[in-house]
Image 1 (tube, rainbow, N blue to C red):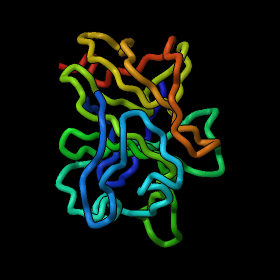
Image 2: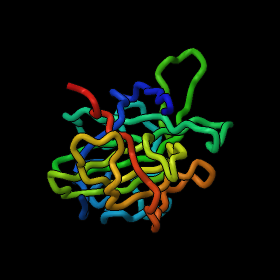
Image 3: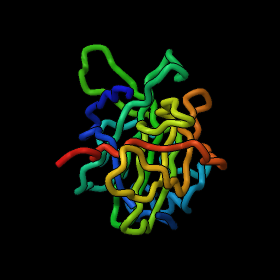
Amino acid sequence: MKTLYFIPIIIFLSCNSTTSHSEIVESSNNIKDISKDTITFGNITNPLHNKIYRNVDELLGIKYEGTPSGAMIQGNNIRKDKEFGISHITLDKRNIITFEEIIRENGNPKPKYLVLDTINVDNLNKSEFITYCNCRRDSIDDSEIIALVEFEEDTEYYHKIIKAWRADTKTGKITIIKNTKGINCINEGYGAE
């Protein structure tokens, strides 16, 4: 089993949530339609693309009342010259997943985050949630995978993958994984009483 290292962005943990549809929230920072389920955004249509921030209020341009979560992307196949992470922000029933480069500044312990790409996954069913940085394919850890999974009780790994994406550290894009065969994700609550 691999070790996950969590970073403080505003509580960076591995995340859960729940399925999919559209838009986001209107704010003074022009974040009104970050769009439709499973769409990967390029630098023209995504209002969050290339934004640099330290906290979610800066990113969204509104006072964020929730607690975002996230994790660092790590592994043998990950680009080594930069650090990357995935964040999960929930607004109402909207789940915004951001793929970010972590920017460290000399003399400042708090990093900044550069948004490389985003997806929205909205209107999840009660049995569905989003997980990332803790999946594998064919029993090989792959922390670039973001998955929408169906909750399964009393199992070490979730095998019911509804949709999956790759936060590709080489291209800086989130891409849809069309064939989810062989993907499963750790049930972090397995064995907990």
